[in-house]
Image (tube, rainbow, N blue to C red):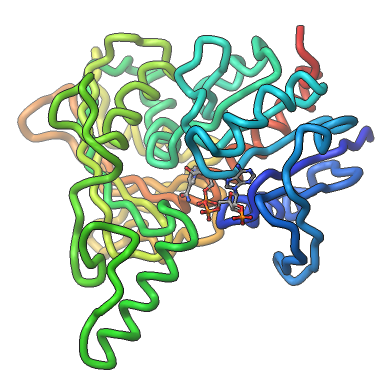
Length: 341
Ligand SMILES: NC(=O)c1ccc[n+]([C@@H]2O[C@H](COP(=O)([O-])OP(=O)(O)OC[C@H]3O[C@@H](n4cnc5c(N)ncnc54)[C@H](OP(=O)(O)O)[C@@H]3O)[C@@H](O)[C@H]2O)c1
């Protein structure tokens, strides 16, 4: 079996998880290079790795580069993403810098794996909250065609990176010692609170914050339905890891909860836990370190025979980031799509 020169850029929460997922899924890695801003030794999943500073030359001779650095102008993808493509790498990016770029397929394998085939060297992973929603909606959309989606999210602090996880843990300690003092990662204390703001306001959808706009635009791009009505409210909650979502989805054709349950249970990558009478439904603590998307609370909307309400939970660092990226690489390798057309 052929094996590959693999680079992981970024050694924070997602970068570390990427290294773990590559190992656990036995991705055919010939050599693994880990790049970040600063050089150091770092223990990941019990093994010590050498982390090197990122440079354009570091991508020479490499086959696949997973980008998990911070976003924006000085971030890894904007600085090195297309440079890595120029130097022959197949790039899979976790950030939002190029998700809406026409050159870049935006892929959730459960929904649009075939889009990988048209890549120009660069594929983007959607936003974590988009990935789990799209994974759960894909089999239902194939059957009954979506007409409208309304989603509310309950997103863990790990979605903001390692610094936010450490701050929640610190706030717990400070609370136990008499009062929370450290509030740096968010505008407000997150312990014992909910913050209905993720990212900043944007002009294109007045009143919506950035994360909500990502969910709207990315969902439309992935399903190839440019005007699909999607509305999102994204909320940060004091959960360490795992994002949860309530989704109300209306279809062109009626679909019963039993049909939906069966379609979802038959879908690889989806686990249905749906026994409300015995209080069984997925929760963030259950999905930590899991690659699947979990669905429960599948109900008919009492006010609309063509609509369902569902509850979706996934590990935002695994399926919401590292796992989805590695799955894209697995599909590219399996289908001979690694090299550009
Ligand atoms: N957390 C999630 O749930 C999640 C889900 C989906 C997507 N994402 C995306 O994945 C990316 C990484 O998120 P994270 O949670 O892992 O963040 P993080 O814990 O803050 O780690 C960021 C990493 O990026 C490295 N980095 C930053 N700028 C860089 C540059 N210019 N060149 C090279 N490396 C650079 C940092 O290097 P140093 O360690 O040397 O400082 C650090 O290792 C972000 O784009 C994020 O939006 C995150």
